[in-house]
Image 1 (cartoon, one colour):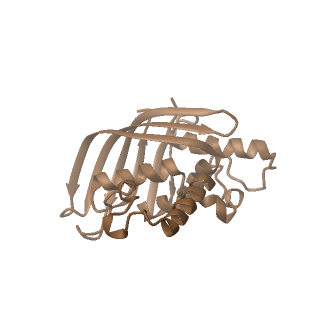
Image 2 (tube, helix red, strand yellow; image 1 turned 90 degrees about the vertical axis):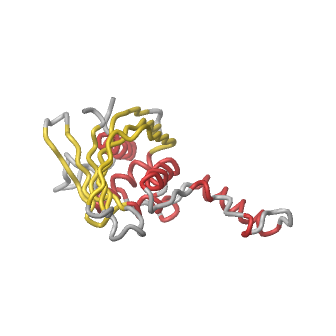
Length: 214
């Protein structure tokens, strides 16, 4: 069983091995998600199969007289959760992972975001911030052929600061199939601190404590 942080690191390492990229002077080996090595072409931020599907659906809606009108509802309405609810936040998080779409994932993070995990290899606590989280997740999304994330029961939830902050511990199952045949399967708990400026605003993830192997 592997933690989420390790899955992100190993996704990037497999990409580096395949491309035989040399180590640059000053590169941090303990945290291999170097921004310059992970910058993708613009089209890679949106999975090509999904992009093709959306283009096809838009084309059909434009020329098909039997297509439902806007008044009949959004055909993608079930895909997006209500970002002002905790359950809606978890729905949008799952969709961003399973679609491997960084443009869906980034708005879920607070600008002061921190990811915390325990490095079992070196027996030390580690963390990274907003920019490195985006680069590590970009590496994971680019190298994954399939991601399946299932949220299970909420173990604990504490609401404070007049409904503007909540701490949620929730169990999950995660499967990541990488290019080349490698697969990672893990389960455990996430410990999320969600914040928002007022009770009518969307939740954003301020702190993620990964508890995959605890």
